[in-house]
Length: 536
Image (cartoon, rainbow, N blue to C red; front, side, top):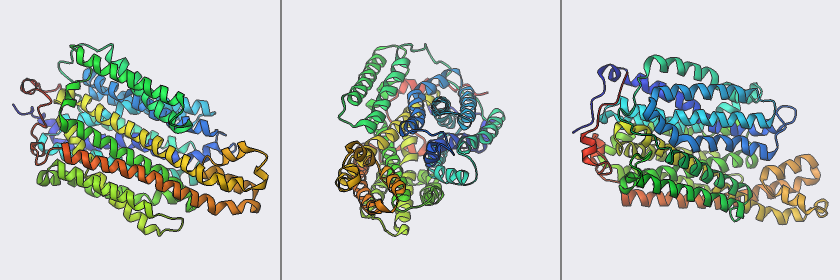
């Protein structure tokens, strides 16, 4: 039997509902990138909070950690209590935490507020995608998911622009305060426009699986973040990652055994579902890793302001805006395999172009590469996300959305941690011999270690010492560019793996393109007995 029809009243306002969902999504995703341009200001003891490098790392990572750790749990909970309720709760928590972040008086307060923002954001993101699956008929769902996916990429790209504009005119807290009017408008529109829906037969709560999922994902992501800070071979980092893996393995074993699982692990038996999830993780690994090293390249090597750096990322957003909503048509014509693999190939080629970036490369070349990458992502995220969502029945849309978004967030954390670690170690290897040649540093090896930790640390020393250290400026830029090329190599490898996965395991001219079932991952009987979700 085909999927149940959407309520006619809801169907008539479906595009307005999508607009509200995209608005709420934009503010949550925007926050994950807008903070990057404010870090230097927050570290200033006069203009900011005097935060240390460790404080700044935690201000960024605390949000990621809470967000990734709770995505799955909030998605499942939304299926049980109602997705509209979960969306409203998440937006309220996110708004209150944004206000607390803006007026934090110490780094500790900021970190605490950022954790709360992650808690709220984790309730919003999977819920928006789950509601889309319940509001749109199968024939339009892929297009709606394409617009949703495009909004994710656009928010990541415009975050630095927004942050740069705000910091040029206001104090550092404005990068958080800007969330408040958006949250208020979204809450008002949600209350009147967005319908509620939930699983009509949610079954019993899984008191073992849910805590295991939170603990496992949190430990794994924290281990990745920690490894990026202290090194991948350190026992502490390896131990935390291993703990996360063990907890996640226990979670899977428990979910296979229990008669009321929080996650239907049988979904992963379907190659198309697993491949789509893997591609989502890989493309975000490449994207977040790229934006991480590109931000340093544009500001530290090329000398651009935070605002100009953000403006230069516009082609990435524009390409996604243009092509995301068109990907559904391409899938209908060519199939998931061709479109997704082609998109991953474009992403990989765009990343490979940074092998040729130097200290004075023409900016227009980099802009073309960003546009091509945006075009590629626009043809990866929508079909891959649609494949994931079509693999679960509507009443468990929150579960499917949570899986997709958790993998996206973990992939992004891996991108920053892994590629950031490669960048840091390669830069240190290349700049240390140069620093060893500076006479005033001979008496303090610890200073050399500190100054070689990043290009910003080296350049801060040059700025402090003055003309006597100017000879370090160009070598630091050269060392960073060489290190960036190694990080690029890592991102290219990830992109190439994504192409191979798409070609091997994603379906070709799949009935999904016409709204049919993705695969036998969900038993036929379960689909036949699928009930219309409760819609108010």
